[in-house]
Length: 387
Image 1 (cartoon, rainbow, N blue to C red):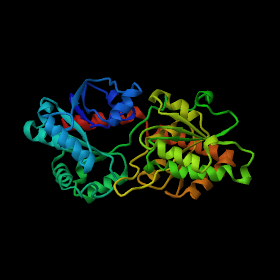
Image 2: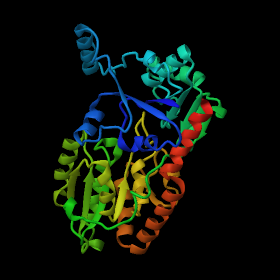
Image 3: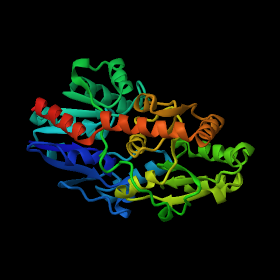
Image 4: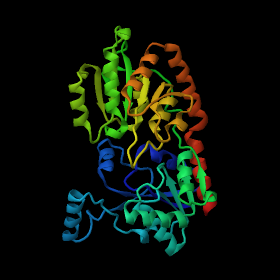
């Protein structure tokens, strides 16, 4: 089966692992646009895929120079998003088209290809906010067309399933399957903290992700300051290990200096995906302190199941799909609340038995619910049923 994989500019190692493992006779071709996200992965040597790549361009990258210049100026001065140069004709000859989200140009092109050559379209939906992106009339029109005409919708959470129901998608066309992580690679093991610049006697709190405000690292830094100045745990050297990069590093650095925690924060930068299990094993606790914005809530939190698979206790926030991902295998705090984070972390610092219980529960949940080969087999089943 020839599968066209449209993930836009969102290709990353953890999204693609399952497509490398599709059982059966699948020929996958990835359609990818260059972007800041892709440049980030290229710098880390992670832009190579195990299957062929078709390069797609934004209208700021292709076309007559005056048009490219105009589009770049509009993108910079009026916050106009760059649009995809139409490529639906390049999807002819595929047995199935996998795209992402209802509102994207990628899904619009997939739908046009279906109209012209009949290939079934499957839409992977991570979004969990009802009627999201509908203030833009163009995106609203795309959403309605995709909702009406796509053949199948894959969701990873109950929240995503519910928004599709609210937006009028036939429930019979929606299938919920949990994404997967390689639980043999992401597994408990020997830790080596020296490579990350933290000591064996320190209590290490790990943050993984983009340094964007929505990931909540600002609130985690404030909670860290509270821990450092707490007389009850004065004998414990608490250290925050930050693995991540992207826009926001300057903002984070300013906050670190302003609240006086520089000596307690270690920035490891972005790490290649194969090294991530080592980072998780170096931690005593993992924290995903996401917050909600008007157009985004944590859609899943892949780092959560990676930490759980490594047997690391997880502390996170009640936002988006996080509660249904973690269940009882983690500590859930109020979002946008550094005091709630501080209190949860303090309790775990003082209670090794509870940390051990959460570590075991997280590992058990990851193996039972988020095995990568199971996810790949379920994806393959969806595509085969469509064809």
